[in-house]
Image (cartoon, rainbow, N blue to C red; front, side, top):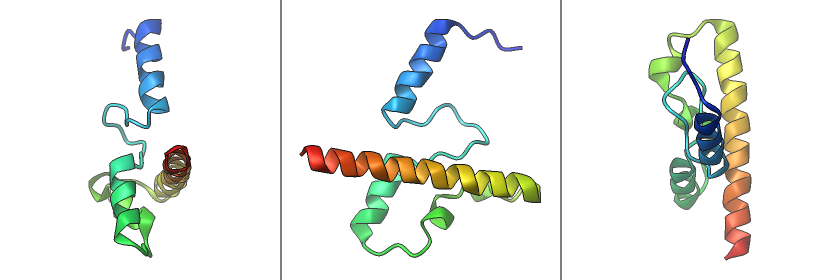
Length: 90
C-alpha cells in the first residue's frame, strides 16, 4: 500500500484546485489547455471524443467506459466553468 502523508494529499488537492491534472491514472481529466484550444477553434461538435484517451478507453469494460465518459463530462464542465470565471475576471 502506498504511504501517503497529509502533506502529499494537500499538495494534490492544491493541484486539482488549480486545474492541473494529477499523476496519470485511469480517471479522465479535461486539461484546461486542451479545452482552451478547442474553444479557440470555434464550434466543437464532439468535445468528449476529442478529450478521450483512447489508449485507456479502449481497454475498459462497458460499465467502466460509461463511468469514464461521465467523469470526463464532469471534468470538462468544471474546466469550462473555470475558464469562463477566468475570462470574466479579466
